[in-house]
Length: 158
Image 1 (tube, rainbow, N blue to C red):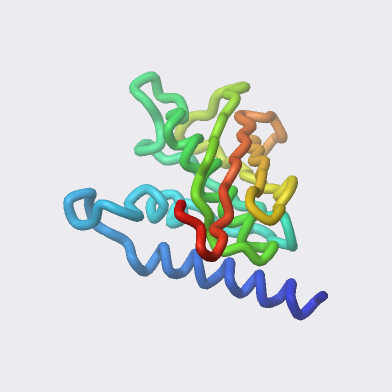
Image 2 (cartoon, rainbow, N blue to C red):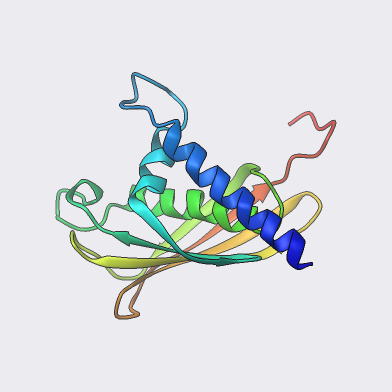
C-alpha cells in the first residue's frame, strides 16, 4: 500500500513538472495547456497524501478582476487543475471534466495567501468526484468547488 502511495505521489510531481516545463508564453503560442500552466506555476504544493492535496497561492494582481477581487475564473481554474491533482494521488491520470461548480463565499484580494485543498470524495470505475476548498491564511472560506470527472475507460468512444 505504501509503495502504491509513493508511486502516486511521484505521478503527481511528474504531472506538475510537465505542466511547468511545457509552458506556453501566450495563447497564440499554444492553444492547450495555457491556463493549467499559469495555475500550476502560481501554486506551491504544501502537502499530499492519497486522496488529498494542499497547495498555497499568493494572490497576484493578475488574478484579480476590475474591482480588485480574486477573479471567479481563477477560482474555477483552481478547482479544475488542483482537483485533478488530488485525483492523481489515488492513481488516476487525468479524466475529462463532466461538471465543475464553484460557490463563492467571501472575497480575496492581491497579496492574500490562500490555502487550496483538494479531496477526492469518490473515484469509481467511470467517475470521480473531487471537492476543493479555498481558504484565506486565517481559515476564512473563500470558495468551495466540486469537480466531477469522467475517467477514461479503454475502448470508450468519449
